[in-house]
Image (tube, rainbow, N blue to C red; front, side, top):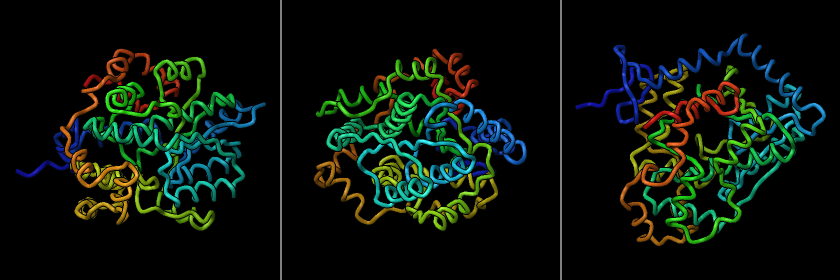
Length: 377
């Protein structure tokens, strides 16, 4: 029997927590419709964006920076640097270096920042420590190998905001170009990382910036550090953005969404498809279908092609993590588990659902966090 595929995008019934309505449209497309109504583009979006910029400037008065912005060398964050600098904001770029950056990503970060004259705040983790975290997640049998990077970046952003007294954090996410990643595909929180590493790790975590709930709440409630996503209000044409970045900044494309970091590229192009039969490209291609930038036929056809991957990347990962071919085969085939098999903050997030609704309304957490992490699973 054939899988049911959404009549609007290319999500199918293998996607976690999906449902389809009478018109054959999936629940994720309906979720995106709600987000589009809440975060308009066009003239209204531009008006809201200008209001946001004015509020950021007012909050930054008398301080060295108006806002901080996470940078990876990728298209979204590089484009946002260009746009937000153009609005006259005094920005501090923030980067978490997990020591797996591609050369292209590093060059992209410095080319854009140097040309715009923007300062950079970086936290660099000890590479042996970080590789031990990755080995822990492999042995844990879970999907969420990239959780430590996402959590550490969030902590790095908060630490920079606290250090410089900045009240606004600019994030480069766009649900229109990226879609919404299902919770069943990725889960992250600081307690989860600690639980996995305590069970499987061998090197003490001394330089890794984990995000503990007490700090998260302190930065939210006492710090009142607002998280804003300007791309939500922009008519953001990613292909045009890439072209502009190449022409104005000597920026380089790295082959695909999430591929600017070597471990992230391995995770998306090899680990998830081979170990879990998950191809994250479906989220981006589905987003392009919803926007009319790609036909469903073209998207389904592209999904038949293997993900882009550097020829030596798997060997590089094995070598760096100290895995022989046999070791790698073993960790790629340990019994499969989920975040539910380890200690996490998930039940706490669920109990605090009304509180996080208020935090989302005050722009202290993104709506995507409220939608995914506070719903009972």
